[in-house]
Length: 227
Image (cartoon, rainbow, N blue to C red; front, side, top):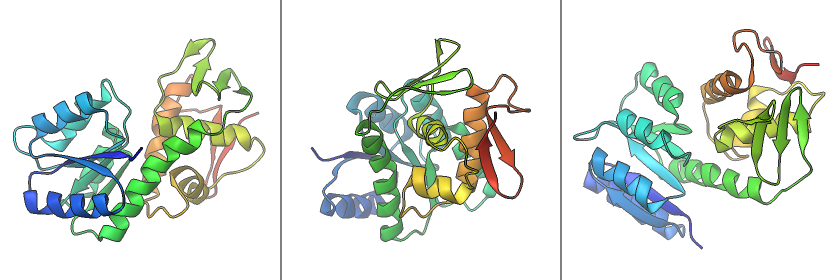
């Protein structure tokens, strides 16, 4: 079954070009031209990934993303003409999985779509026995994570990050390695996405995120599991 991509972009010409290239790669594509329409389609049509422009009529991309994240963990790539660093970081903090800045090459966009949809499939195909990190229990068959027997609401990417650490309990893992192994081998990414994802994950798994005990930073190198 082909993966479904939702494009939320108010410039029809750009949306049509993206749609043409995605369809050529075998994706099923839906289009929305406004923020409210994009939100409605994202929640009702269950796409496998959303390409979400920031500058949208009626409701901007940040608002749409915030509403999507209230009920869905679908991968979202922010597509924007803005160059400001704060916009990129805000998108990641709000719950975006990635971003691309216009003008972008279609090769780059397709690579990011592939990386962000492939990770969901790979996680489902590899059931293993349950694993523990401190008081965190990872049920790999159910793709569920619990802390002190209480379920944690993790995104798919956060789940894959903590699972990767559980599989490498004695290793210091660099941001580059996380980008390669979790985001995808051929992923053209920004390492700040790793930092933001790690911060969001720590807010959910650590008793005190400002002084993490489960996943610890080794300054200038990467991250490792605490004892």
